[in-house]
Amino acid sequence: MKKYIIGIDTGGTYTDAVLIEAATGMVIATAKEPTTHYHLATATGKVLASLLTASGVTAADIGQLAVSTTLATNAVVEKKGARVGLFVIGYVKHFPLPVLAVVFIKGGHTLQGVEEEPLDLENLVDTVRGLTGEVDAYAVCSAMSMANPTHELVAEKAIGMLDPKPVFCSHQISQQAGMRERAATAALHAKLMPLMQDYVAGVQAAMIKQGLSCPVVIIGGNGQTVTIDQAVQRAGMTVASGPACTAHFGALQTTGDALVIDVGGTTTDIAIIENGRPVMAADGCQIGEWQTHVEAIDMFTGGIGGDSHVLLDAREGLLRLGPGRVVPLCMAQGLPPASTWLGAGGHGRCIGLVVGDDGDGESDDPVLQFLGQHGPSTPATIGAAIGISAVPLEKHLEGLARMQLIFEAGFTPTDALHVLGRIALGNTDAAKEGAAILAAIQGVDSEQFCHAVCLRVEKQIEDLIIDYIIHRYWGTSLTSFITSRDSHPVLGVTFSLKIPLIGIGAAARYFLPGVAERLGTTVSFSENCEVGNAIGAALLGRAANVLASIRPEAP
Image 1 (cartoon, rainbow, N blue to C red):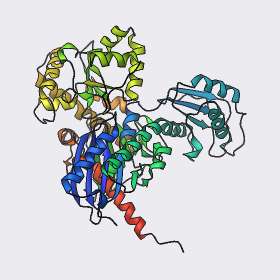
Image 2 (image 1 turned 180 degrees about the horizontal axis):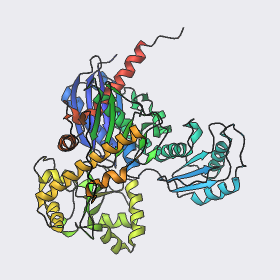
Image 3 (image 1 turned 90 degrees about the vertical axis):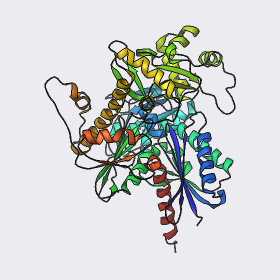
Image 4 (image 1 turned 90 degrees about the horizontal axis):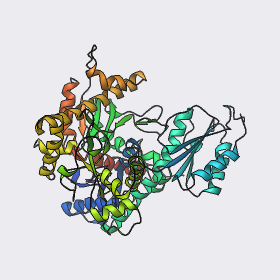
């Protein structure tokens, strides 16, 4: 067995890495770099190089690379990922899912596997012809397909004859009842496959560049390791990869019960620990509004983090936060002065062209051409220059962002922390300029505004925790009540937590103490908690190695 294992966690904001001893699990070195979405191999290569340089360990001494990622989770929360066409067969009750199109087709079977109604193949074929070129993948869910998958198989074959895009059938990935959950699970796999393909390619390219030839495993949402091929073919398995590593690292900090809270740049993940062990979700994990049949730890993810977009309502100047992530003003490069574009409502962000290692290349896209010639600009400026109205422009910008061709910059909690002097990672002057503009709109000074932003982050994390606990133990959601309870004119409600919090993630130290105080509990931060997910990945990879090494050979 080789001496060392590397754990990597690729998040929406940062890519973290750790080097541990294979024999003891001791952390030897850590590294952190901003995630380069336009070319994931860049950030991965940088953290690998940093680990090897800092430790003096050679590539030949690395026995395994264990990888965790929250990219899949973030894509769901931020409503990104592939464009999916979902066919629902034999079920006509509408349910909302973040896919491009939901099409209801006659067909389906009974619980005994008897055909309830013939499959309307003509309607399916006509619809596929209309969706060809508009979607990146298809998902198919037929009533009671776990008892008889015939209609899903026929639909898969028919789609494949008309469009070469991948097709995911619910019976292949879920044998549980629940039409909505099976449809969500199939759509989730379809939505995330292209993203996982890009990610795996980035990891492999970075390894080649650093001379690493060791085995690679991806941590699944249940804490088990899967191969690269498995991670791509069933990308939904990785949707709770980051939270699984979060829970494993957090479980090392206690022998009792606790809530592990990972506050990243894009999302906040919550996992529960009971008797020192992570708890598995009984019916599959929930990501944002998606209840799925994906086997995973019991966790909850919300779109709030250090780089969540801070917006002011154009009419009343009210503060809103997330769920989308933007590049903080203090970290963005080449932006025009905030005084020329930052404001309330639709003036809260600036769009820029992503420049990869190999340059932009040429494009016939009018938005990319404009940004290439004029630099970062507001959506209003872009629309006026190229003659596109607001609604179609927003749809087009969503597509360009999904393809990692553009970035969005704006004011974030990270900027607020810079203004308040709590961190100094980037351009504090840029953060101060943005804070002054937004504070003036609200009629307060910059520090008051930034304190309000940080308080809003704490409040939204608190609401996530309360909503998760209520959903887990009472099986219901009170989101609308929880998030508006402080403004109710008659009723005042407070909550207290009987178990402690364990903080993980780069932003955790800045926001969780206030959350713990509001909930009447405590929070602890262990050594290297800022890279806790990467440590969890390395240790889960190590555990899989140990199990493999002691497994008896077949007679």
